[in-house]
Image (tube, rainbow, N blue to C red; front, side, top):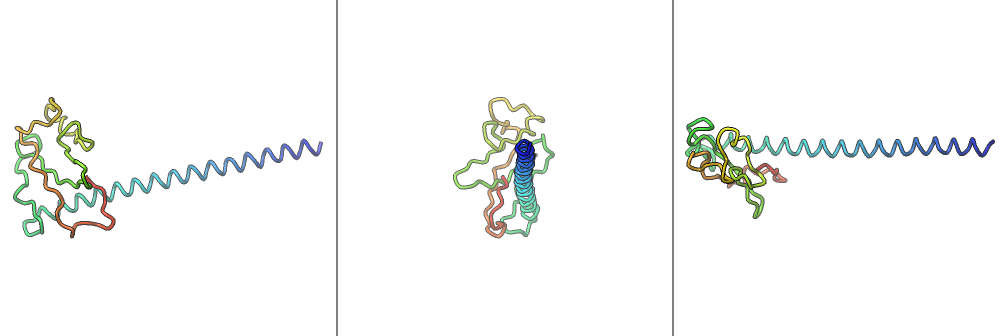
Length: 142
């Protein structure tokens, strides 16, 4: 009788331990996802803040001369400021690129694997050229 009770108690303690291990693993995954979400949020915010600063005429590396005067969908309606990493190609106007901006194709026909450049959907990309905008470590906005 004592052996059976001991085995049942051991089974209960083992199940509690396994449940705690599973719970810990789930919490670790949740924390990792939260960290990745925060990194993506701040990378996107950094990109937006850089663009806001560079839109000013007196800013270093200003883009005020390249700003589109038309709304999206019209000629000159889009402007991309890209942040390639090393030899990476960031081309949001190409449907085959990893960073393709699929919102454009909801406005115009993207046949042929590219947003029609004759429609003036994008101005020549303006890469980040100033170290004054760089965070440490550099945030991976594209």
